[in-house]
Structures are given as structure tokens and as C-alpha cells.
Amino acid sequence: MLQVENLTKRYGKVVANDDLSFRAPAGEITVLLGPNGAGKSTAIKAIAGLLRFSGKIAIGGHDNKSMEAKRLLGYVAESPGVYDMLTVLEHFEFIARAYDLSDDYKAYQAQLMDRMELHEHAKKLGRELSKGMQQKLSLCLAFLTRPGLLLVDEPMVGLDPYAIKELKQMLAEERARGTAVLVCTHLIDSVEELWDRALILMRGKFEAERTRAEIAGSGESLEDLFFALTAKGHEHKEAQA
Image (cartoon, rainbow, N blue to C red; front, side):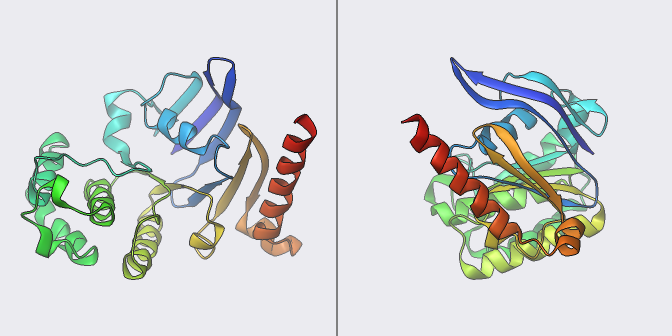
């Protein structure tokens, strides 16, 4: 579903993403792991079409900036982006109109609102919601279109334990539906029971890629691998200082 080839993004002399190539297959949860500043969010924003970059990104065989690709995409940013002057219900209506969803979307909307406990906030404006409720709304809006590719950047941050449990179940359901899910996080335990494919990013480059089957077959621990690589990263920084 998602194919990234030679993704490079520079901010002046700083290389945030250095010739990254990877894929996120349909029906799998791919996690992009790395410490803060590794380039995870930059890669996610490039895939979402929000940044200029060198390389090629295709979603469902379409260039990621094409309308065909955007219709397949659901995106949740690291910081929730809601409209200050729209109510919760108006946010759903806006997305439904933008994606030309049929009227039966409202049944699914009700399910999403129930799972993220949004019903009692239905008439509140975006600016009246707490950060946690804004995050829940952003998640619901991304799920509403039943995307082919779901990008979620640090999705657990700011959520209460109940919402985290529900979100994990929702992500598992999307995988079962055949959605390609790409989760960007530095919190390994938040995706420990979910991931199928893990990519570890350090200083803009991939240091390791593993599938769950490879980890299970080798007896390796993803957590141990991650911390071993990040420890090397700290040593590298100290050596350069």
C-alpha cells in the first residue's frame, strides 16, 4: 500500500531523512521507532504530503500528492489539529463532505464517538476541548473515512488509559480490515503487542528493520535492540562533541 523510495529531506545543512526506502504493506502494522529528533515526524509529514522532499512516495500505486492517494490516506499528526470554531459534530460533517462519504457514515461516526467518549462533547467547539479530547477527535476523523493507509504520529500521547486500550483495539481492527497502518513512536511498550514490522530510525537513517516473525525466530528482543542502537547513538554524539 505504501512504498517509499530514497526519501531525503533537508533543512538547510541538516539532513532530517537520509535516503530512506521502506514499505508498509496492507494488513500490517508497521512501526517507525526512534528517539526524539531521529526524523520520524519528518518522514510521516513527507508521506502525508505536507513537506517537499527528494525521492518517491506512492500510496496505493499513486503519487502521494495526488488526489487518488489523498483519498486513501488517514493522518493523525503529533499535535492534534482541530478547527477552533467548529463543534465536534461539525468536524465529522466537514470530513464527510470533503471525502464525499455516503449517509451511512453516521452509524460508524456514532461508534467512534462512543469508543472515544466524545458524545458528551458533541456540541463543544474545537477550542473548548482539552488536548486529550482534541487527540481523540483527530483519531476519530482519521478512522471515519476507512482509509487504505493510516498514519498515526505518537498516537498514545495525551490519551487516558481507557482511550489507549480502545485505540489499540481499533488499530488491530484496521489491520484485520486490510488497512496499512504506520505508527510513529518512541514508546515501544505502546505498540509492543501490535506491531508486525518495525523500522528503527537514528539520525535520519534506518539502523535496523525487523518483522515480528524474525524477532520470534531469533530470540531477539525489539526493546533490547532499540536500546542498544540508541545507546550507540548517544556514544556517537559524545564522540563528536
